[in-house]
Image (cartoon, rainbow, N blue to C red; front, side, top):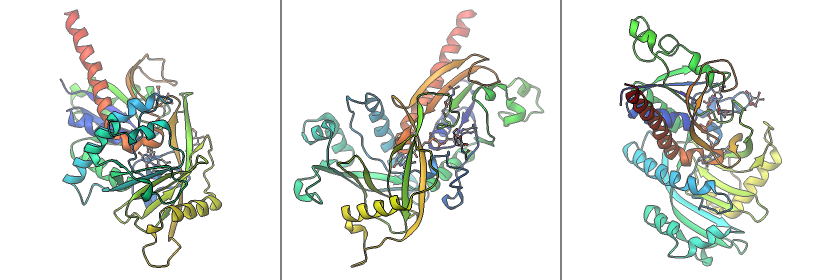
Length: 392
Ligand SMILES: Cc1cc2nc3c(=O)[nH]c(=O)nc-3n(C[C@H](O)[C@H](O)[C@H](O)COP(=O)(O)OP(=O)(O)OC[C@H]3O[C@@H](n4cnc5c(N)ncnc54)[C@H](O)[C@@H]3O)c2cc1C
Ligand SMILES: *[C@@H]1O[C@H](CO)[C@@H](O)[C@H](O)[C@H]1NC(C)=O
Ligand SMILES: *[C@@H]1O[C@H](CO)[C@@H](O)[C@H](O)[C@H]1NC(C)=O
């Protein structure tokens, strides 16, 4: 396929992963975003609260497909392909990619039916996970206390979000990708930009052919920020970062619906202890009472984190508040042709591949989503080529 000019809007985990795979497929790719990855310590907790990727954990925790939430069946294969991709990246770049492989342990106090069926040795999801990552259900003798009704363990990965994303962005740049920092009012604004001059796409703008360069497709990986999709909402998460390195990513589902977890970030990033899931809460300020509660509950669940004998306090580095870009019915990963008036705001029309609304799963689904983005964009180009041929 001839090289196309593609703009990816967004430099969170979804935008950067998609941009990399599109570049790998041979296209001219530019990322436009307001926020870019940077050292975690420098990201502004107030002004960059809407940039979710720095505030994630981020670990991979399997979510077995649930009939009550149909989108989980679509997400599961994306998590499997992301796992394999992470494994490969980690083995090629163990010191630099920001990925750590380690045990994942889960304790559930009120396990939903799709978890209980993983206990059956013939369950297809459990079987595929067993061969992929050594997934196994733990016997009651391994439960930390009697409130836990179901538990499992497997090999999984955590990423240090900003180490990982700066690594990916650097690779993108090294492979000839272009990067533009700009805040947009809408997606359709991109089609009105003059690629050669504004975006450095293709050849330098002095060459006459580049005057005709146009943008062939736009990827909408904007998280929640355009706020034009009524199904998108935020799920606030408050966590606390401690200096200790936990030796596993442990997740506990409490019977009151709350969650207790640890996500070791690796690469001197400490461990995230979490965390809340508060639908529609826009509060940017961390609540100190919540911090105390998170630390207490995690210490009770996994006392192994207190490595030094007798020590019962963790070293708090800071609180974290983030907004998971959640969407009713699951993420939107599909193509759409916008007409010149569409897209809510002045600008042109063209093909948009949506990839937003990943909620609390952006990292663990990222490569699967990026593959879907490449597929969607190329399917559109193929359709166009066939149409053009038919007209000859
Ligand atoms: C507390 C917490 C814990 C989490 N833990 C995990 C976990 O363990 N595992 C996991 O997989 N996920 C986790 N997540 C979820 C994960 O962080 C998100 O799903 C993911 O970061 C979303 O990435 P994104 O690329 O869609 O959006 P974002 O990271 O928000 O990126 C959006 C991009 O679009 C740009 N943009 C938006 N609007 C505009 C505009 N108008 N003009 C220009 N640019 C624009 C932004 O600048 C940014 O570059 C967690 C989230 C939170 C808050
Ligand atoms: C975050 O997004 C919300 C909703 O679009 C907006 O009201 C708010 O001003 C944004 N915050 C920042 C710091 O940009
Ligand atoms: C792009 O994504 C945002 C979510 O960040 C959504 O609100 C918006 O409607 C999408 N743009 C278009 C043109 O559909």
